[in-house]
Amino acid sequence: MELFWGESMSCVLIDACGWAALMDAGLNLDVSMSKVIGKPKYLLLSKVREELISLSKHRKGLLLDLLDSKSELIEAPEGIRHTDRMLLDLSTKNGWPVLTVDRRLKERLINNGGSYIEVTSRNVLRLIHN
Image 1 (tube, rainbow, N blue to C red):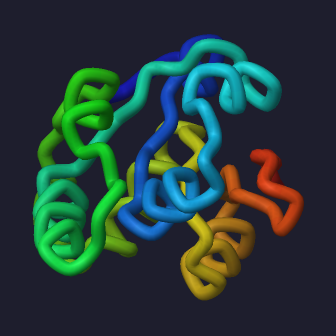
Image 2 (image 1 turned 180 degrees about the vertical axis):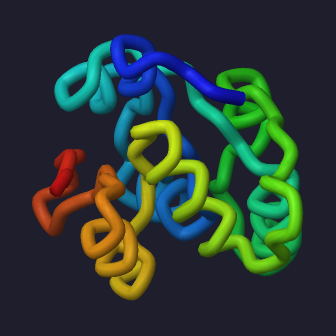
């Protein structure tokens, strides 16, 4: 799954905590994302989807049907088991930002040349890249 740089920023990887934060903020996915990155293709790792399904058993309002309709399910990079490492690998190799609010993942992304989109305290999205 290799893209040329010109295409790379048109994809966004979804992290479970990033999706939950987006839903908690009550943001419209397409409108909010268009302000920071245009109209991207949303990519969802199978493992992230499993985490969200598990989370939805204890939380309401995650709108998983919306996520399923808007995103493309992708397989994990070979040989990687941990979700954050999968996201880090895909982000740094392809130039795709990760929608996340996970502090450790954000640090690792920046330290390794990746990027991320976060939900700020003012309930807006912000793209951070190295």
